[in-house]
Image (cartoon, rainbow, N blue to C red):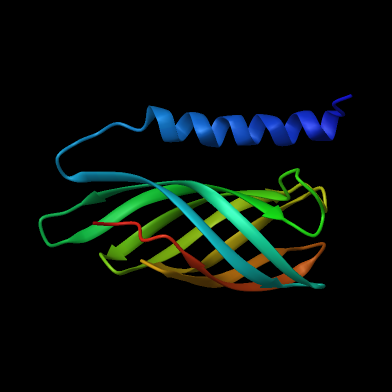
Length: 145
């Protein structure tokens, strides 16, 4: 039986997957799926698997601006998603600054996030007034050709 919390998680996953399928293709745009694994160092050390979509527009000076939507699974907690995050990104091809917000299903609270992301690495910190700071570092699939 699906609980209200489980239905909310399923809705966020469906939204992220829908964004992947509906992303427009343009000559100066790049939309890719992203997959990675990271360690989060909040109130406890948490290994997380994440997947989602990133879309970026490239300027004539090779500067990227865009956004990404990610769904995270804490694989010590089971198969349901643990959190959902949407961030804006800006920067050169190989490293972008990120800022955004998300929702933690396990803590039932929204959070803010900031960090950097490159072709293979990601790092930053999530902040929730109720849970405090949760730095993270991880590896991910390359995002740009």
